[in-house]
Structure formats: C-alpha cells, structure tokens
Length: 367
Image (cartoon, rainbow, N blue to C red; front, side):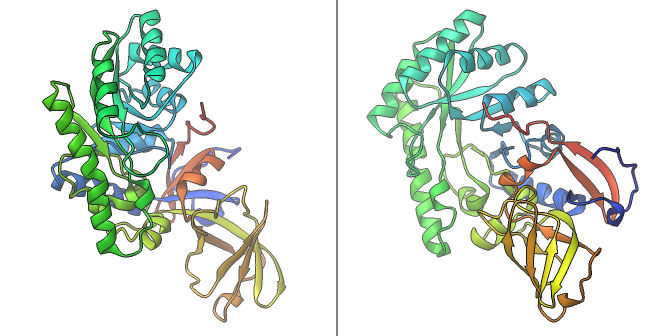
C-alpha cells in the first residue's frame, strides 16, 4: 500500500485489490497443526513457501515449531537475517555462487541443505572450506515423486557414507517428499500409499544407523497428507506448512480436516453488463487459480468462471445478482503458494478491523 494504514482501519475502507488474512482463523490453524504434530510425537518444521514472511514464521515458532523450511537459499537468507536461525532448505543446489551464499549463512545461522548426488556435495564442501564453516546436510531420498532424490538402498547409503567422510559437512539425516500422493481421492488408499512411501525413509534411516551413520533427522510431510504422515513410524519431523492458511486446495482436494480458509482477496465490482455477470478488479496478477480456483465468500451461488490479467468474471445466481458496481467482495484464495508471491504484504484483520501489516520479505527470492 502506498499509505500505511492505521490499526483499527475497517476492511471495507481499503482500496482494492487487497491481500487479507483473517487472524482468528490463521491462529486457530497454526495451533491446530502444531497440536496435531505434537500429539504424534514429532517435531514441526513448517514450510514457508506459501507465505515467505518472517512474521508468520515467528508465529509458527511461538506455537512450538523447532525451525522453518524453505525452498531456496535466498529464502533462507531472509529468515536467518531476521533471527530465525534453524532453517532447512528442502532442495538441492548447484553452482559456486549459490554454495558460497549457503556457506556464509553458516556464520550467522544453522541452515541445513539437501543433496542427492556427490557432485552437489563436492561443491558445497568446497564453499564451506573457502568460508571456514561447517554445514549440516540431509540426503534427499526419492520416495516416489520422481523429482529430486537419490534412489533408496545402496545408492542412498553410499552417498551418506561419502558425506560422512567430509570434515566440512555434518550428515544429520534424510528427507523425502510424498507430494505425488496429495490428491489421491480414496482416503484408505491414500493412507496406505503414504505409509508405503514414508516407509522407504524409515528403512533408509535404519540402514544408516546400522552402518554407524548419524540419522537424527528424518524429515517429510506436506499439508496435503498431514493426517497420514503424522502416523508414519520413523519420521522425526513434519514440514507441513501450507495448512496454516487453510487453503481450499488442502481442504477440498486433499481432504485434510481441522483447518479453515484464512486468506482472501478484497476486490471491487467494477462492471455489471449482464444480470448474471459481474466483473471484479482482481485478475491473475492478484490471485492465481491454477491449483484451485478462488471461491466467492458469502455468495455460494456466485462462481469464478474466468480470470484475465486484471479482471475476474463471476457468474451470478439469484442471490448474488444483487451485487452492484462499487460493492466489495472477498475471494477466498484457493492456493496461497502461487498467490502470496504476487503481493507485498498481508493485511491482518481481527474481525473487520486491521491489526497488523506483515511484509512478504521473501517475495521474488527465487535463487
């Protein structure tokens, strides 16, 4: 916003589009997820890719998270530079510049990086030697997603043994991601497949320990499968973080219970050229519909049928046809990961009154 709003400003007075966070729902989601993970006897290291905001990360830490997960070194820089020191970069990296940036983070924080090939390990170790630091490292194991991740079994064991011999690196465990199972419709099938997928990590950790290797961390678990990941034996920490916003993607498509949608786009009706059509001033530059379309809050008979760069087209039913030009409407964000990156800040509301403004400092951090 060009003018900093004052605490207590009413939501309906804001110019649009505006990125709004329902603090009551957000805080309830955070507490629910923290309690779920705690009751399962596991640690919580929520992923920050859906919010990229240290302010939100601090709320998660206050609720009991042991650290934060990021996708990129640049995101970890943002977190560590704001005092959040225990950060897992749940990704593999390559290149001297990026490895040097990682190494410098080890001077002020305690990052953990992942590797699935010895070529990555050599580059990271060389950077650590240049900067006189030691970096924690996890072996990234492919548990069925077929993205990054070394093959389990002998390959994963040999990579860990090689890492263990490098003085500049500290092998602390393994991670894997069951993301390919998020949208399995049948919940009994999903439970079984998640258990089988995470069972690969359990077996790998046992192999490491039998070989005398350190495997204190076994990290996995996204918000879309949290209900089943929490049951998995041998997993020490869960990365589920997106659920703090209660996105419809997690509730409707992933069937995850106990969370409620907390993020909306406040938009204005700018055109009513037809009885059954309304146009809002919020398009794809404001909300991304690709994973899950936005929903129209308070008007169940209104449907988002098209999003162009700057416009949202609503198909209106009998109740929502009373909308007129100038009315403000809230669109429930379907999937925050692809929408938060479009905004500079979260406007935090308690009821209809502004309570806080949280900058999205990790926006644009893609390296």
